[in-house]
Image (cartoon, rainbow, N blue to C red; front, side, top):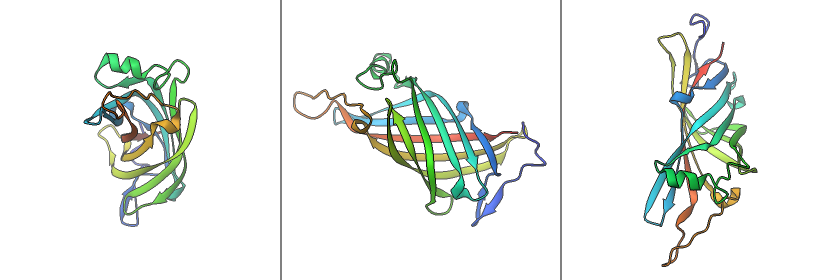
Length: 193
C-alpha cells in the first residue's frame, strides 16, 4: 500500500498521467490475449493466465519502460485438447521455452494519451522487435490507498518469425491455423512503495 498523501498523478500535455515510479502488474486485473484465424473461417481466441511485469513511469513519459514475463504453459483457449497441443513443440514448446518475454526499448508519442512502445518479444527463444500501440485507460487512487494505472495495447505478429511454424494444410488448401496472430493487452498496474 502506498502513502496516499505522497502519491499524485500529473498533467502532461493535457493528459492525466500516473505518478513517476515503479509499478507492478496486477495479474488478477491484467489480460494478455491473442487471436488467430482457424481454417480460414473464424478466429480462435486465447489468453495467458501467468503474467508478471514491471512498468517504470519516468518524469518524461518517453523515457518510461516495461518488462513482462508470461508463463507459456498458462495458455487457455477454452479447449483443453487444443491447449495441450499449443504447449507442444508444434507451437510454444513450453518444455524447452517456458516463458514468453517482452522488454521495451523505446517509447514514442502517438497522440494524446497514446504511445508506440517498441521492444523485443521473445517466443520459443527467438527474439524479434515489435511495436505495441498503447493507450492510457486511466489513473486512480483506489479505496485502499493504492495508485493504479491502466493501459491497453495491441500488436500483430507473424508466428513463423518466432519459429511457431505448425503448418497443417486443409484438403481444399489454406492453413488450419493462420500465420498472423493479433495480441491484445489490458494491463492494470499498482505503484510500489
